[in-house]
Amino acid sequence: MAHKVVKPETKLAIFQPGALEPNLERLVQGDREAFAQLVMFYNESLYRWVARLTGNSHAAEDLVQDTFVRAYQAITRLRPDTNLKAWLFRIAHNAYANWVRNRKGRNSTLPDEVLDTQAGPEELAQENETSQKLQQAIDKLPEEWKAALLLRIQEDMAFREMAIALGTTEETARWRVYKARQKLMETLEIKREDAR
Image 1: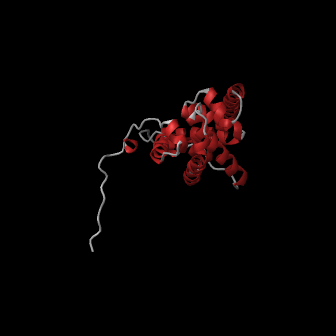
Image 2: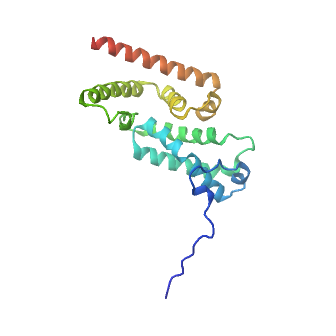
Image 3: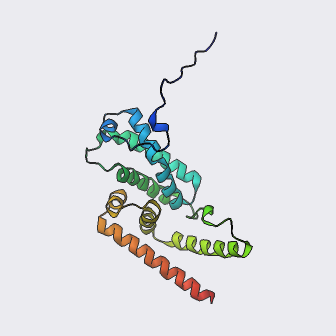
């Protein structure tokens, strides 16, 4: 008995590069295609942010998957004025906060790709040392400061969106980024003076 292969008649736009932002109205109605579009549109930026927060690609994959599962469960309760990006990042931040409470030990927050692979051995060693110092400084930041800083520098998120994602006010989001930068500069300056 031969199996019949069903081929789609048209290619769905959601699986093509440059997918458009999903339609909120269709999402609230439970449209699976719209939800797939949501996943395609935000998966990479969520993963990138969570991977930087956790320093662990496997944990990041799990947290992003958990984010989309939770989003799917709550999607029909969205209001028409909901900022989808901020809402998803808020869910991811909550998943990350739970992960932090349950983890044993810290992981790095900077990927290996930060290093310039075209540099010579001496430059690579110096870049590696600088990267490690920066990574250690970011790891030592309070979790709220680190999350806000990475949303700002990595995702170029507006403070209004950050406030929603982090469940705080816009002013508090600004303050957390400011304090994180201030602490990083202070920490890196102290380490530079110690090296002299």
